[in-house]
Length: 284
Image (cartoon, rainbow, N blue to C red):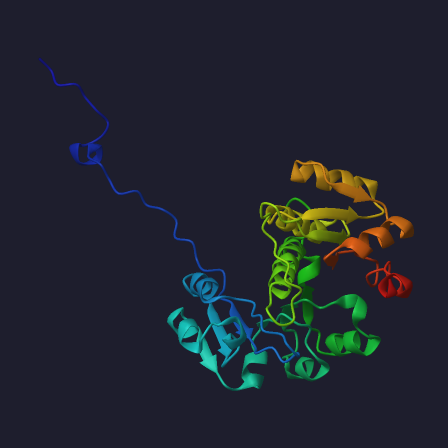
């Protein structure tokens, strides 16, 4: 009986290794992270874990010595993550890509190389004409954290900072009130037989929402004020419970402020936060 013929040899019918395309590295990044110089600024753009993820892809990170101290990240942690540490501030600012939390000062802009890229919270509305002229002279590409959008058209950096601000405001208030010497002896926590803490939140945006959620979670009575009915409606829907909401009517606001234990400002304006609590309200 004749053997079936095949156009392939016996060797070709055996499992073979697949030849895949080797993708070339498009170009490595050289990132510089200077130490923040602004008063009380302790943040840093990248954690050691983030640096490890970046260096694992073949990129380089240069960090100024002590840049992570305020955030409790040591130079050794960054070194173990693959970063290089330098005490030379100018060397860090000479990197092609610089990451910074606070807007760079005019002196720091002077240390940037021409055509460098800096990513920072530029706070564009607060900067002067001379500031932008200095950036233009060096042909610097400046990217503001607050204007970075994701695929959904949202601003992830602003959203994250707003979440932190809202949650922290309630936790800090709880800590201050519970202090033995300077506190007023009140506690969050919805304790049986004890009247709950009264919290007034001015603003129903992202900060206001997370402040309200945190305060409600700690058993407080919450009142939210905002001139946007849509935001007030959304905050009740998202919290999935009914709470006191009102527009910013002076009479209602004054009444709430007189009785509250904690007042949190979370309003946003075009250039600065609007002033809704008058001196008369404070005196009362």
